[in-house]
Amino acid sequence: MVKKNACIFISGKGSNLKNLILRSRDYSFPVSIKLVISDQKKALGLLHAKKNSIPYVIIDTNSRNYENKIIKDLKKHNIYLICLAGYMKILSKKFLKNYGKKIINIHPSLLPKFKGLNTFSRIMKNKEKKTGCTVHYVNEKLDNGKVISQRFFFIESDDDEEKLKIKTQKLEYFVFPESIIKIFRNF
Image 1: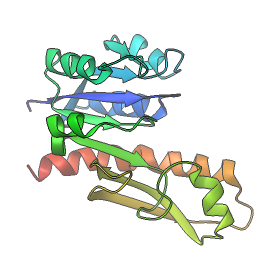
Image 2 (image 1 turned 30 degrees about the horizontal axis):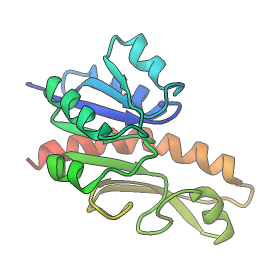
Image 3 (image 1 turned 180 degrees about the vertical axis):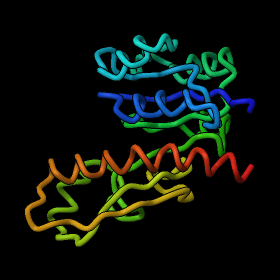
Image 4 (image 1 turned 90 degrees about the vertical axis):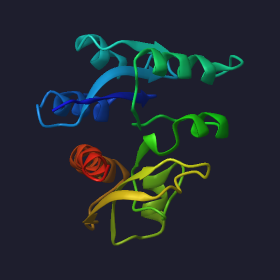
């Protein structure tokens, strides 16, 4: 199987990055991770890139035209698919035009509910019965692109925000790779 090159964008711990790196070692997984981009120089997820000898770039989002640098790096590494995995910056319309349906994101709720930040506290305040995660294509509206996959679990009476986060992340480790496989099955 000829794998396509993927880039993972992160801002934090990189647990989904770590999981995708492990999955990408499987012969039948359709992508190979060739680049990691972070907007945080102290993002712990960069350790996963270093440990696995994956090139990484730290972007200063306060600098002018920083997306142009990202685009150059993506072209340099012949990136076909971009996976946003806890990347906390919104991509510009210009950037989205360059990559279109080749950018996906994982979000810790059952979209269209609870778009944006502070997801777990809003889920608890709303007294939801179930929650989960969504992988979707990225478009110009926040957490609004076409859904690729969703998985859910029922919220238990003793769940708090931290427990929801842990349960959701465990679910993400299945849904994100499953969504990537699904994308390539549909091409």
